[in-house]
Length: 327
Image (cartoon, rainbow, N blue to C red; front, side):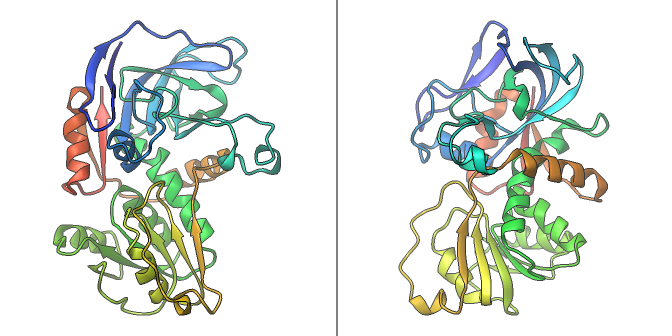
């Protein structure tokens, strides 16, 4: 098999030839059809997430075909298309797992961070954290659903019953969940990197009611704000934009420091929340819902060996929608 491997933070990935892995009990070996390039991968590669298992194969938006079923696995047959997300395994017995909050597990494994991921021709996955995907559809457009879509879905749910929403940072997650929110009858205002007219036009093309620089005031008071850009300075701006009782939900795994802000921005029962990982119930909900919606998925494919170029384009904001590696 071939894999793009991170050997040390802040260094380019390198292509390696490896023996085909053998799945252990409860595991599947997948032939990778596509793997999305997520901003979390960038945080791993750039050393902003500081505890990867090195060397590591990044990638946690995996669409693959079951090639070998490990001992004890039921419900999966060779050739079946499955998806593998960021949360790759949980202990099953800590207080969080025991209370339907496995996303906060005390002893988890994360795909592409603490276990090898999908920047490869083949991958090993825990069958319990692998999800059956539709047989129809292009793998490259399905891949972003496995994190951008799932985290976007959890972020939207945590915002509560908000009918007017601001979305800060219009990348892969935002372009999916903004469409979902609009299809639910919500009004969505997009806030993009200052000067990024392409992102603003992209948001409007997907049905956003408005699109403006992230430092501009909201065109109306928001019931909730979803922040996907890893920019802490957006938190007080979003708090200032939401109504009394509104929510600001930070959907990323990493963010620059949040500057100090006056208590008045939080007062009147505004809520500031963060999203951590996902649960299997999130995955089942969203992966059942997504095929029923007319989502316009924007995915730019790259060959596996161009993983560094894909990460660079994401880092520099040269993408609309998502980047996807296709072995």
